[in-house]
Length: 311
Image 1 (cartoon, helix red, strand yellow):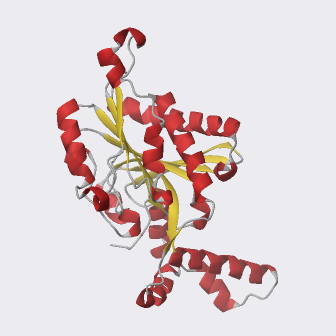
Image 2: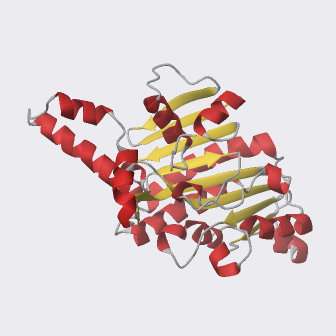
Image 3: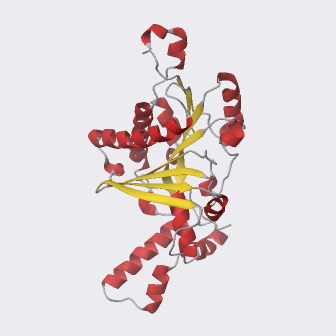
């Protein structure tokens, strides 16, 4: 299968089309775009059959991508607006899989001590928990309120336990009707870092985007629907070089210094060649922006507020 090295369904589709010189749509993959405003766009991708699943290596299901161009510098008012948009999309997926009062477990994947990987645990800290309130202080809970619990289970390197094993124990004991899993993702585009949110109802494979694949967290492994919410926070050095090369070629073209070779180079995806050049010296690093601390704070606020509003 094609080496995508990205968690985003829209990127995988585009890469597959480019690699196979396809102008038409891929059989088994449907998509639609919506522009909310100039800086906010939504693309909904649905994989409908095994052919679409095999083409881009993503399970049959729904993938919603929110592109928010100013998420990096969002202020409180903008964060509230983005959270509302996210909650509307999340609510639509929830309505497909669980009733209005079905119990939900929110799971924050990642390592709180590694900033680019800290999105999940930070989101969990701001989720409005009701499970203990309904059990011990029901008089303070609005009638019909959904039961919500949350956990940040850590990572295999610090616990020695696969995350899916931890979650299976929790699911078997508290019996939630649905999981919402939040995680940091990898992208194949530097412009998507901290500016794209992906929702899907097919679960998640932690670490898949950076080549550190862990056990799948999905309906197949846990027996209940799993909705994932992720934001890209890292790219590989090969991605950075490839995108930088494209920008450099565009600059040369604008200055009328282009030639047939540069045009051909620009049309191709040079990721694999660049990666092959970097790998022998272990130079294909995982890269994140220098301002990642502030970005994670903004991103976790958008996601936690969005989840709270949707639930």
